[in-house]
Length: 115
Image (cartoon, rainbow, N blue to C red):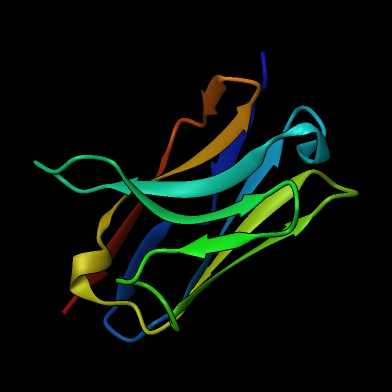
């Protein structure tokens, strides 16, 4: 069972920045993919950014150019740098670790962007 612990969420004004971190209990190099998802109230969980085993990165169109996903494989930490935040980025952000058909999720971290 992979344990994921997110941190870095909080309250920020429009245009501000936050960096989320996700510490994994197992090597992220063993994952098929690691990524960030978010869920706003009343909406479905959606992909924000994902990094696959072969180095491919997928970024949602809604955050492209503002958010960057990166990883420290040696420390097993996944990051999400969020710049130029908008009110519509407000959501609970979840870290995901996908390996051989199994999805593992963190507990989520709240990001609130105020106008």
